[in-house]
Structures are given as structure tokens and as C-alpha cells.
Amino acid sequence: MATSSSAGRVLSLCKQFQNVVRISSAVNTQSCSPALTKLPPRQYREKSPLAALSWRSPSSSVAPCRALHTTISRRGLDEFFDLPENWGETTVKSGAPWTAKQLRTKSNEDLHKLWYVLLKEKNLLLTLEQEAKRQRVPMSSPERIRKVERSMIRLETVVNERESALRMLQTGQEKARPGAWRRDKFGHVYWYRFKEYAIPWYMNRRYKRKSFFTPKFVQPHIRLRLEKYLRQRARKTSLERRTQSKLKEKFPHANISAS
Amino acid sequence: LASRATNIYPLYQLGNPQLRIFRPNWFLTLVRPGKEQPPDTVQFRIPMEMTKYDVKNYLEKIYDVPVGAIRTRIQFGSNKKRNHLHQKVKQPDYKVAYVQLAQGQTFTFPDIFPEKELKHEEGSMEEMQEKFMEDEKQRQRLDPRRGGVTEWFGL
Image (tube, rainbow over all chains, first blue to last red; front, side, top):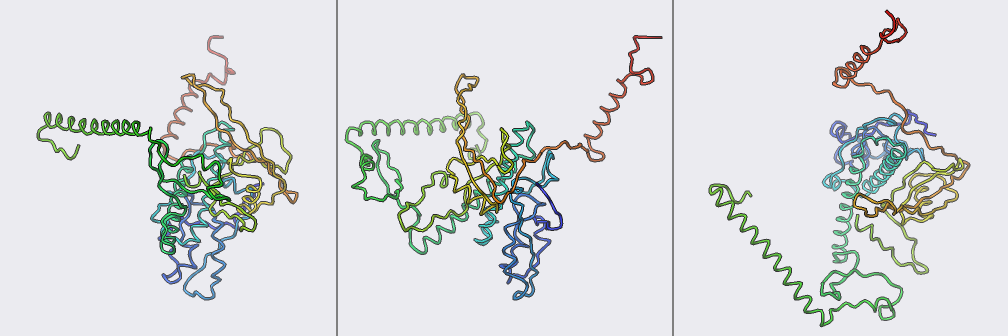
């Protein structure tokens, strides 16, 4: 089922080659992003979702740029498995995860496509892990899963940053989901996030059972809790002070700020 | 990703636009079926929050795989085993999806761990160790001219 034709494969570029293969000029970075985009952690695989970018630049309008065309992989379920050369290897080479700094330089379309590349990679690694457990064989280079996870988390943070900046500019709201500071029964003040309902709150029986106030008989408990917290904080500071004084006694010439 | 873990979908009322999910945070694991399955059936482990329609759209849109029927079930992870402190240890529950491919396609789970000959690179530590072990074994072996019989017998 896993037919691999090397004819249709294009050697994907990874970060190390990025500086070598700098094709386009600064003007045409948009259309030539397939060539410059850094790959997910693996080096020698064909990149499928980036092919769409090359369709828009068929070498008509942007003269100095050489468009790199990659074929869309139509392997379907074979994308759940690695290249057949890597089956049975103990270690498979993979690059470093994407950092947030690198991801911030990418456009939204590139990030969107990268998300799916990373998603497919993670699915691949998870199938490999499960099959390795099934066959009772150690999985080849398990650190790849963590790398992909980290890249995805960073991608999500970058996208959220951009979304939040846009929302602030357009509406002045910091948070996407509205909320409010509320007290619970125990006297804690917390950020309550609103939930969407089809009916107003005064018709919602379950919501009315939630009391967002502190009854008066809870006040002694709050006071005791506060005393406990202050006692613990005082203990911590006094402990620090005691250790510092002891160290100063033992080592009078030592640098205090270093410890 | 905590934001996705406590994801709340927007409320749907008649006339609302179709819910679209960008950058889905769901991962499918293709597993080898424990019991014999028909040739067009693929078995996946999917997150608990996914439904049959989610899996169908996922495979069709992301993997371009034509999907026919899908059936799902939830596998209960055992809570019977106990650790060295005699506490019950729960194995996580998971959802299994049996996906039947459309257009008469078939799928067999490949052998991902074939036996490969370990070739060490030239001049490496492992190669020297291998050679040493080979020589040791050669010295331990008995005389092949006498048919591997021990020296205890005969002259």
C-alpha cells in the first residue's frame, strides 16, 4: 500500500539549507515562501501543504523569483506512516523545533499550513509509538513528539498574540471571551468567564443556584485563612533571614547576593 | 493547550453559520486491529471529544481519504491493576473509530518494524566490539574437523 516514487519527491529544505538557498529578492518574499519557509523538525520529507503557494506565482508577474513547485502528496493513509526507508531504524534524524521568534516572521497563511504539517507529523509519530508498544520494540527517536508539541504550542501562542492585538485595535477588548471578577461562597475573588446561553440568566434555574456572594458566617473562616497565609509568609521570610545570617557567620567574606 | 482543552463551542440556533474549526487540536492514531477486520476497515484511536462527523471531515479534508461508514466506541481503560502502594492505577479511556473507506479502497496495516541488518560504521567503537565478540566466539567453538564433538571423547 505504501508506494514511494522518488520521481515526484522534492527534497524538502530545512533550516540549515535556508541560508544557502536564498532565491528571491526582498520584494517577492510573499510568492517565494515555499523556498524560504523552514520545515518542521524532519529533514528529508516532501512538504505537501505548501504546494498551493506556488500556484499563485507561475513566473508571470514576479520576474526575479524562481518559484519552487512541490507536488501535493496524494498518499492518503500512507501519511500516517514514515518513509519506508525509515521503517525499522533505531534513530531517525530530525531538526530542532520551531521557536516563537521564527514563527513570528511567518505570514498567517504559512502558519496555517504549518499547523497542518505539524498535525500530520504528530499523527505519524503517535501511530509509530502505538505500533512500537504493540510490537514490544523501542520507538525510534521518541523526542520528536515533544518537539512537534512544543512547535504547535508556540504556533498557537503566536497566532493568539496576533489575534489579540487585532482585537485590541478593532474593538478595544483585551479578552476574546467576556467575563467578570466575582466572589465565590468561600470568599475567593476569581475571574468568572461567561458562557453562552439561549435564555437570559433570570430564567436559568441552574445558574441561579450558583451564588456569587460570600455569606456573613464565612467571615471568621476567611479571617483564619488570612492569618494562616500571613503566618506561612512570615515563616518563610524569617527562615530566609536565619539562613542568610548563619551563612554570613560561617563565611563572613562571601558574596551574599549570589546565594 | 488549556484553551482548547476547555473549549466551549458557540451556541447553535437555527440560522447560525456552520461551525468551523481552524487549526484543530485533535490527533488520530492509526492502530493495528486486535481482531480481524474487513479489508476496507481502518482502525483509529481518536480523542474523546471527536464525533463520527468530526472524524469524517478530518480524514476527508486533511488527508484526502474518501470515507464511507464510521462507527465509534469508547474503550474503558482498566482500573483493576494496583501499584506497589496497593493503590488502584487507572489506564486512560480512549475512543476507537472503525472507518470504512469508500470507492472500494482497501488498507492493510504495514509491518513498520522489519528486521534490519545492523551495520556499524567503519572504525567505530561498536564495530570493534563486534569483531572482538566474534573472535571470542570463534575461539570457544570446538574443532570443526572432529564434528563439534568435545575433547572429552577420544584420543
